Image (tube, rainbow, N blue to C red; front, side):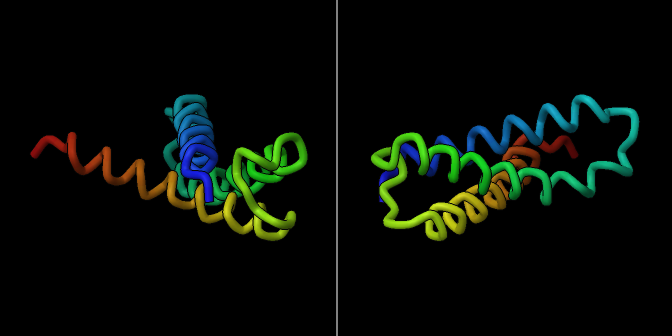
Length: 90
């Protein structure tokens, strides 16, 4: 598996999550949807990459691409929590 494609999917999903959070910054009740949104974005981006340039993610079929994208999108939420905990002010 090519790590560049995986990192790219995580980065795009993370950025979309941050944009969503910025758009709804006054409505924190919508923040609970961020994990779902970034997971869907990850799957979508992975499928787009699969159909445009299979060499980036190096999977054999679209179901593997979708699964890899969903997991990468979900890991964007974990990445957000890691960054949040590192810079947390006590």
